[in-house]
Image 1 (cartoon, rainbow, N blue to C red):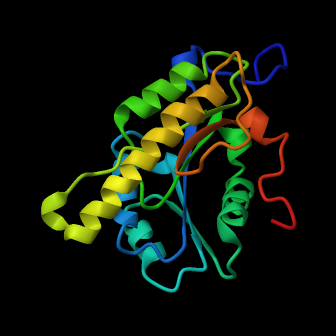
Image 2 (cartoon, one colour):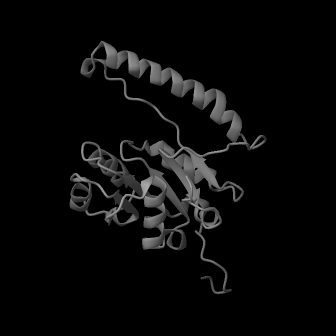
Length: 199
């Protein structure tokens, strides 16, 4: 709290504190890379992995990195896991915002800088990520290359032609913020139901 009794806010917009949530269910092959990516940009105590009743070594791999780990004994789904880790660690009370990172996604340093820049506008409630696929033709057969090329084209069309148009400040008609890498302002998260019943 500030001396006047109001909520504590960052000194400058660039100082917005962010918690990184990585929801994971049986992500043993990829969780290490996602955590390493987050640790390149955040302190380990700001990274929270929630293992959603994983039957593999997901939680153990995360624990060895020194980040915060919440292991759920019953499967709650992605939204339920996110809701659980937010509540368990009071993240919306302790951080200005929450970054949700899929367990098979790696962050680009420019994304975090851009998200913080967007959050300087107090009217911005969420910042959506932008997907860039890794093109590794030497590691894939013909079918793998065809699927990767198709996915790249699909991502291009969805992101440039749809998402940017929907999220432009003058239209503001986005119906969903994608979950692979997105930042939510804490005060906005406190006003919504993260895990609505019946979904």
